[in-house]
Image (cartoon, rainbow over all chains, first blue to last red; front, side):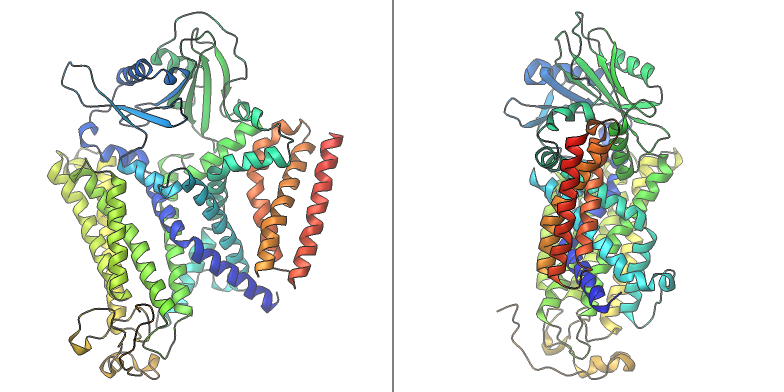
Length: 552
Length: 84
């Protein structure tokens, strides 16, 4: 390939990565954790950890919502207790807003209260919302769809750039003095070895986020306006017309029994009613099918007599439903049990490392090798990288602690506040200090997760392990593992700051002039130059006091 | 660079849209049975065409090449829609 073409792809790769990198990192980290959405959901609510809601309570929730909100009779869904430890109902209000309701705590014997909210407040839901929309209402979803496309473009161009050396370098990881080489190897190895999964994530992510705009575009551009009316039949299980029948609406238990009979391999996760109380009312039971990449399945039950009026599940569906189901399965990683979910968890984390190392490479390849004061754009990029990427890690860790310590606060507000403080901290200090400080803080907060779990809930890591409760113990254990990893990263970052090449944004700013670890810009003194290794310090110039263009 | 990007963004989009639509109309059981598969195919086709424009020697060639692809794709779509 011509050198000029390779350069083109390299700049496409660079800019796609830099533009989408920050959002992508949050998406990757949030997505990796969302693999264990229901585990975290159970962990974050100590009251219902060992007493999940019953089906009868779910039915009661649905009845209370129907009684209070007539719009919910037309269309409403509930998540089942088998799928979520605190089921909720969702419906669309007459003004088009999506509403949600849960059963509130109540005194024994008394009628439970209804907690209404159109936002999901919990930790696990917040992580999920950060994953698919950065928790931005409405447009965040489309933003992340575009970010997915950038991600896809970065993957394609990255592979093309790396192609000439891919066979030689695939298992190479060269630690040593040349840090750029090391990061490059790590970045390439992760990118190439997990490429198939990353392509799947990028494509299915774009599809899931942009399905509505895409359908609208196809409707206008290619299908002559005939597409939109087909969508309900193409994606759902309910046929366009249901023969009306008189009778009394079945209860949840009966609906689930009918669905189980029709699709024995499906584990029901949610039920949605349409036209409750009418002769043609239908309950659609959604679920996850075993042993198929196309996990997503549904059975439509006529509500008044329990007749199965529609179904799509493995072996009983057309191409449209099969492909849709596979898009879900391939993205969520819930198609082959817990082992595959762990694989997806690790792949998601690796994706975050991929994005992070991409930013580090961007900085490293623009580093001025013989100037202690790096250009302002590099310094600010380093600050942004430390502040946003590591601030995201810290924010998520603090949100875990906050979920138990301050259940009244929303996880999103805790996350956003922590992220804002982290970015401010990074803006005010040198990149090396910011990165080390945030890594240390994240490690400490990760340690605090099992500590808080032991302090404010009746459970603790030892008890959970002893009773074989893998879910509760798992969250605590992962926090401990993360604490160790973040501590190691902090140590490495600080060692580089002290002993690494002083001509770098990651070098520790000089302690000269009695200044503390501020972003001093007077940078290296000769003392630091001798401190560093002789071979990578060709000439260290002691710079006089300079005005900082970024600060003025 | 920007010229190529714009070509990939606009022409690539319409070429991919038309190609996916043509495939849907050409499936034996009719386009309604292939709606989701072709929508799922679309990002891949678009990104593929998008990435291909950067391989061209000049931006003009990128516009001509992708423009021709778009015309062919639309011809295929209109033909497939009329015949099937």
